[in-house]
Length: 231
Ligand code: MN
Image 1 (cartoon, rainbow, N blue to C red):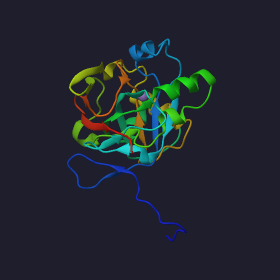
Image 2: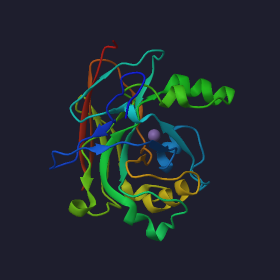
Image 3: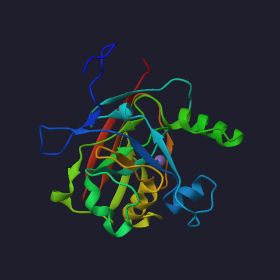
């Protein structure tokens, strides 16, 4: 293909035990999917339908990578999350069939400019500036389903410079991974290469440079990134 300006490489993330990488098509995120986190954000964790927002595909940051502190915020928050990587696409996927669409799972961090999110909430503005910024979607190596199966329970934690900040269990997700895929596939055509960040447990908090964030999910893997001074 010839383009009128230089084209860029596809955004991608590592795959555990593989030289080849996973190309990223879109990044979907689920809001408030753990009751304790909904409560800490001042919301009622009743089982209202899941809601979604997106991040640009090129916001991914590899395990071991650096996150320059983003501009326009003084309150950057960490949210450790289970990430689902789709290997197949489709629409109107039934929850019972959804697992067949999953290539693998990873540990991710949904970085959030919490101050901009509060302004957006107050003014009924979209969340894009709060969520969809550069380097805002660290994602660890994807572990294929063929190796780890489908995790449904297990500790999910995040430490900041070895201080435990977030702690939960995948079993506490309000909407399960198959239910999330079913809902999303009624709103969007899902594609191979889509990543889904499935929500964060309680304990979200602010991070300043220089801080090493380490996320871990039992039975899935881990992710470390370092927040450094902005460019
Ligand atoms: Mn989140």
